[in-house]
Length: 121
Image (cartoon, rainbow, N blue to C red; front, side):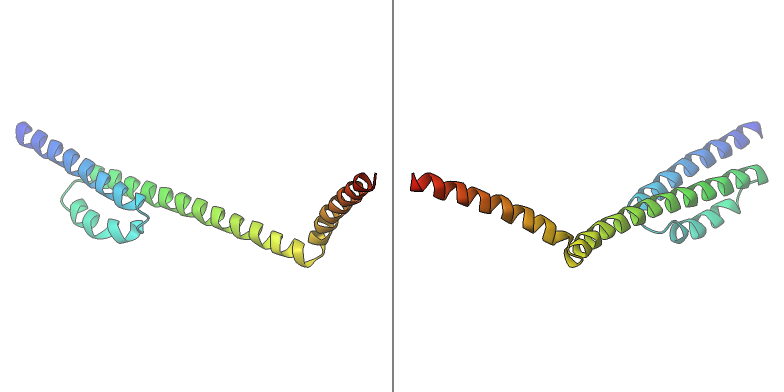
């Protein structure tokens, strides 16, 4: 009996490790963790004891948390780039772009005046 129990536990650990690798691979591709987890894990959970089910529940919660953190980081990064683009556009509309244009025109004009003075001498 102990040998059979040990074999079952070893098989459980191997299957769990394999499933975790598959889920992490799919989650890294950006697929929704909730689409992957329930079908496979619910069937898998029903065949084991309460302790194993608790481990699986902890795994599910942890994977969902990781997914949410990763997606919130991606969304935050995307929004930041959008805000930077909008700031650029807004600065051009509110006249801040005119200051930069004026400064460049001023430098160009001074350069042209100096060049003309050199040419006259």
